Image 1 (cartoon, rainbow, N blue to C red):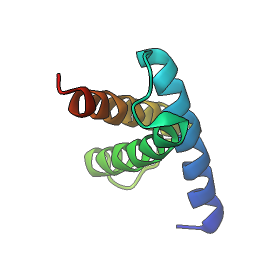
Image 2: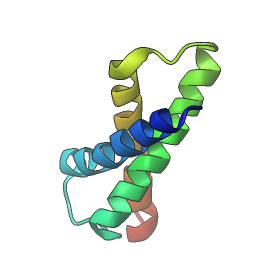
Image 3: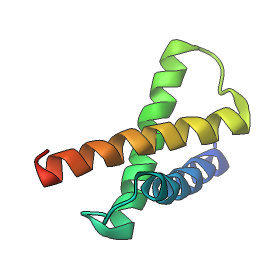
Image 4: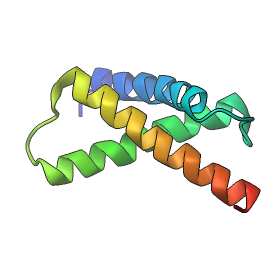
Length: 86
């Protein structure tokens, strides 16, 4: 993976974490930095899922953004459930 590609994924993941928090609402249990980190992790997990389901394709920028957002939503939602116990 080229360095610029990694930087783009990190940036998109970080923004996806902040956007996901605004969609889910509430107080972030780990703060904005936690949302950014979870967004990056969600983007990576989402990218791996897409790469597994559709081998040999990246899907382009739009698919990358949607994948990162969905991954971030899933991880932030899960972290909320684990942190609040419900």
